[in-house]
Amino acid sequence: MAQVVVTIAGRTYRMSCEDGQEGHIEALAAHVDSKMAGLRTSFGEIGDQRLVVMAAITIADELAEANGRIASLEEQIGALSEVSQDARQMREARETHLAEALGGAAERLEKLAREIAGKE
Image 1 (cartoon, rainbow, N blue to C red):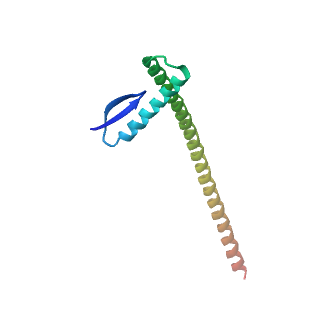
Image 2 (cartoon, one colour):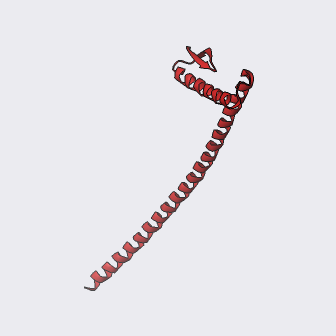
Image 3 (cartoon, rainbow, N blue to C red):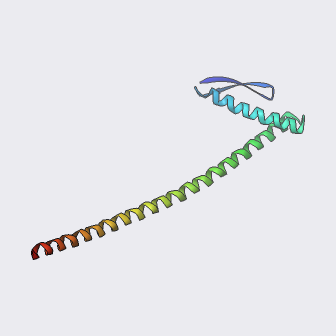
C-alpha cells in the first residue's frame, strides 16, 4: 500500500492508497483544494467546516451533472445502435432482393440465349 501526502486548505494530510494511484489522489486533492480556495475567495473566512461542506456540495453537484450527461449520452448511443441495426437489416434486405432480382434476370437471359441458339 502506497502513501501520499496532500495539502488541502493549507493543511497537510498523509493518505494511504493503492500502488500507482498516488498521482490520481494528488490530482483529486488539488481539485478539492482549488474548490475550497475559490469558495474562500468568494465568501471570505466562513470557517473550515462550512467551507469543506460547501466544497463537497459543489463537487457533488459537478458529479451529478456529469452523471446526467453520461446517462444522456448512453441513451443517445443506445438510440444510435438501434438505428444502425435497423439500417444494417435494411441493407441486408436490399442486398437479398437485388441478388434475387439479378438471379431472375440471369435466368431469363440464359433462357433467351437458349431460345436464340435453338432457332439458329
